Each structure stands twice: as structure tokens, then as C-alpha cells.
Length: 126
Image 1 (cartoon, rainbow, N blue to C red):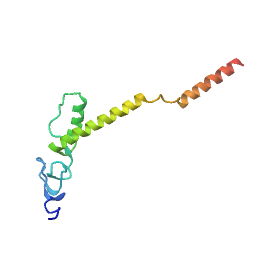
Image 2: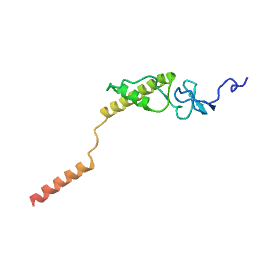
Image 3: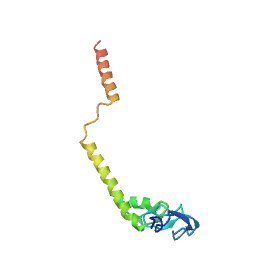
Image 4: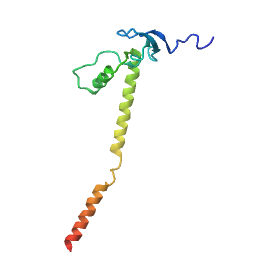
């Protein structure tokens, strides 16, 4: 048996599975849920409604994802949460590295100011 026989194609002519669309056009398979969507609704996004009144960082991220075009995808939510956690850990490591790093070397402007002070003092003595 060929491995292609039992597998569904990645694109075909059909109906978009997004409940508000239902266009009959070329549709593509979502890699997370396996449903077929038009190009407008192909991108997955976390399902559910965000907390509109919250100011927490997690809720703001969810709101940004919620506003993007696409389709709500339950299997994508676990991937999205893991991706957000990975980004936060990477950000925390970068901050830790900055805190532990040596202070920056003297800037060019501070060198110029120091030189001008010395020059001013030397001319003042004359």
C-alpha cells in the first residue's frame, strides 16, 4: 500500500469549513486540526473569547491573536501556549544575560566631553 493512498491532500477544490465563510474555492488543510479552509481562514488561532477588560500580559497576547484573521483551532491552542512560554523563557534568559554582563565601555560623547574639559582647564591656566 502506498503511503499517499490513505492520506488526505493538502489542498483541493471544496468548501471552507469556517462557519461564517462557506466559500466554494480552493481550500487548504490546517496542519493542526486537519480541516480545510480558504486562504483567508487558513491560519489557526486560539479558540475562545479574550477577557476584554483585563490588563494582564497573557490576556493582551490572547487578544492580539484573537484579532488576527484565521479560524479558531483547538489543537493549535496547546502549540500556541508552548510557543508563548518558550518566548518568555528566551526573553528572561536575555534579561539575565544583560544584568550579569559587564558595564558598557565609555561612550564616544563622554570621551569628547572629558577631552574638552581637559582642554578648557589647560586654556584657563594660560
